[in-house]
Amino acid sequence: MLQSKLFGKTSKTKEADATSINHELLVRAGFVDQLMAGVYSYLPLGWRVLDKISDVVRDEMNKVDAQEIYLPALHPKENWEKTDRWDKMDVLFKLESQTGSSYALGPTHEEVIVPLAKKHIASYRDLPGAWYQIQTKFRDELRAKAGLLRGREFLMKDLYSFHASEDDLKDYYEKMKEPYLNVFKRCGLDVIITLASGGSFTDEYSHEFQVETKNGEDLIFKCSCAEARNKEIVGDLKDGDNCPECGKAVEAVKSIEVGNIFDLGKKFSKDFDLKFTDEDGKEKEVIIGCYGIGISRLMGAIVEVSNDDKGIIWPKEVSPYEYHLVTLGDDEKVYKQSEEVYDDLVKSGKEVLWDDRRESSNAEKLNDADLIGISTRLIISPKTDGKIEKKERND
Ligand SMILES: [Zn+2]
Image (cartoon, rainbow, N blue to C red):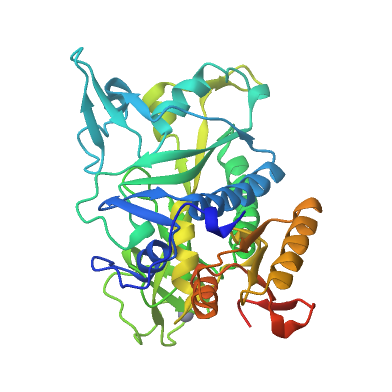
């Protein structure tokens, strides 16, 4: 890709309404554009990153034999009444059609996938099953802020697993922690697995995958004796208080939740009468698990923790391009050499953004390269004397 033709310009000026580092840097570097609070357009650089994160997630989900599907974003009101969430979920976006029918814009998809599963699950032979999608979700947030971290429209991976017994679900639930840890590692993030409450519809606990950062909205409590705990389940515990388990001082840290896994039990099977016949011919309710990863939120979280005073530092696997080829000076010979290098790299299947802008100064080009943050930079200038200088953005 030639940078002279790239859709999306960098900006030196600070974003007046930026509420977070990820908003500030992603807008200034030309990755996203804010349409309104909590709603963003993705420009080519931003869309490439989102695509790469999606591919990492797909790769890890396919490894645990989950199959990718795609469900509608527009849901009939009746399904949400069946689960008693039409009135109770305050963030549910509701639409009225000119036909008089009402619809929801999906913030989650139990109301679609469970009735779908009912058409395909009849016997224990149909279980277990695990299906996932990468879909746009909607939440009617009162305070949409923090850039891509808390959106009203966002991209998410949600996976649902269906089991004949609670034990089988527990096995799969535990097994799912590994691909989750792989996803976050490949995205350059250290995560803390955190015990959390099961939400409003289950007595079971859930687990969250939290990234520690001073700008996080969540608060988690760490102690060496056990897994970290979300603030919802520790009561009035404060930083430095004695751990209820071992008595040592707990550490409270701010964090961003980038994924979660839930044991939904039989709640939705009961609502939609999803049953199967077991080996003895008895009818039983299916046990369901749910596993989410916020894809666009993950992009925001990466920028929150991986940046310096000059710009973004993309981890290799989700960098918008593998190489940022930067040509300095205005020497005809140097441009000719750059063009050959660019052609060779592209021919060998490499992803390259070439800063071929003749009208930009060297300082402008280097500042932009720092701001955009592509993981590996190749510099060609009259000074490099026919050679290429290679530099990692995180050096
Ligand atoms: Zn402890």
